[in-house]
Amino acid sequence: MKNFKINPNVILEEFNKVAKLAQRKAFITVDTELQKEEIETIQKYRIQLVEKKEIYKVEKLENEANLIYCLENSLLALEHELMMLVNIKEGRMNEAWDNLVDAQVTYGTVLKNSFFSIESEEGYLKRLEAYERLLFPPMIFTSVGGIIRESLCSLCNDDYNKCNHIKGKIYNGECCTRIISRMEIEEVSFVDVPANKHCRAITTKSNGKTIDVLTLKEVDN
Figure 1: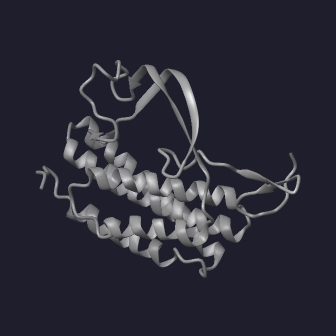
Figure 2: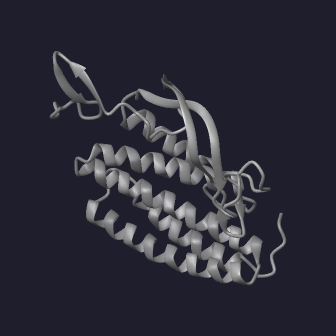
């Protein structure tokens, strides 16, 4: 366990209360307006967490800042989940899929960096995977293959291959990402397990008609 200069228990207790209330409303049967209200509640609390994280960053309290990052992004994943349920009930299926993928990616980053027990842990990621299996049809994904010629680190803006940061890892409350600025594309393939689930076939052809993959409705070309 990491050492904290500021006792994190108060923040964790408050976070757990907010998360539990949100999870109570993360069911398809819950009233849509109540879910929208919960989304707003989460957004307001996340703003408070981000403000606290910025203070910790300035004070060089890296463990505290990293913890806040994990808590704030755990709530962001919950927010995406609630938005997915709302969008499904309001007929916006493509947006709902994007919400689910965003929740999976966001919480996946939390799990990779979590050094303090957060109540949901891996069970929440399995919940999101269950949504994918039960609420959405099998997808056709695409993947781009190529040679990366130039990429930068999101934290230090240096050449990613020369800096010491690792993508997906949190440093002083911020997650490192690799920004690809120049790439030679060699192929685009259909894959079962993509690096990015946003990259998918949106429509298909059937009897000369263009059909939405999620709704099976005919769409304009």
